[in-house]
Image (cartoon, rainbow, N blue to C red; front, side):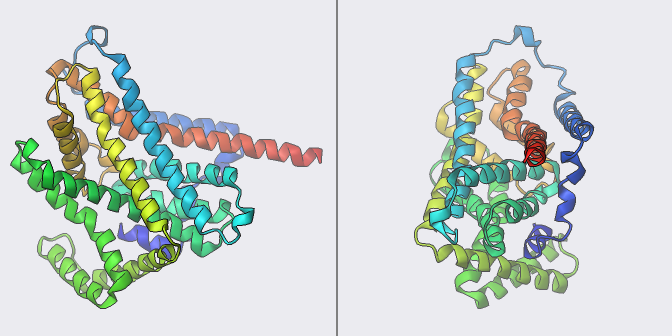
Length: 372
């Protein structure tokens, strides 16, 4: 996260390396890129699920396919809400709203969101998504540099705040539905990491002096548990990065109603994503109630937040077994595979597809220029 923020302060540093420019020029390269992504998915899937000896044969698995429709709809509506959040920010922060092109903005927003999640899911600790989003928006959004930097940053902050709101409500009013004290404790610990940046940024926006003290205490805490080695350097770097975030928040807050709109859409996104496991479980014959399943999903999501692997691979599968244990052992493999498709693999698949579409667009534009 810290490295991600420093990139946002200077978005041209190393970020162009995230986007293979030659990829869009030669078909052989984009085909190779797609194959690499397929191999990554295959290796990851095998490492996560390949040792499941108890998995039932697919031909023997009885699936209520119609119950996967609401799971797919949750995903589609969730992504649409996230894209709409970026469109709203682009519109409200546009210098000239009269010339605002909604179609172009939606295209840029969709690619910013989907490719951002693609890089989040292939880089450790999700450090690749936001630098790419900043670079892509600066190049394609037709917005001023400061605005195109602020939008991805606040998009991330509002997304975290949306999840925090849901998690706090679940832990306060739904924790009794979970008979797992270890999971609740781990989830609360994960939520501290999840909440640190948004809360600190908001405090920095209004109470800069209090922020300095808060950062100092947090860094000392991390040093005591041996996560941070150089306290002084980490504190100075964190203070600088928090201030950069605070500048972006102040820019957003200047636009009336924009903060609440983005926060509401973030709550919608996180709520719908947390509902997907329930429909997957039901599709595979699991007898579960909605509320316990939803609360457990939120708790597990919070618990694996600080795991620094791409897409929380490894930890996510092991921890989410708590959710899918309602199924018979032979069905758990297939149910978790479907869930991972909606939460992880689909983003990796979308990356090369969007890049291929960008290649075709560049090729078409080049032909049009030649004709003219």
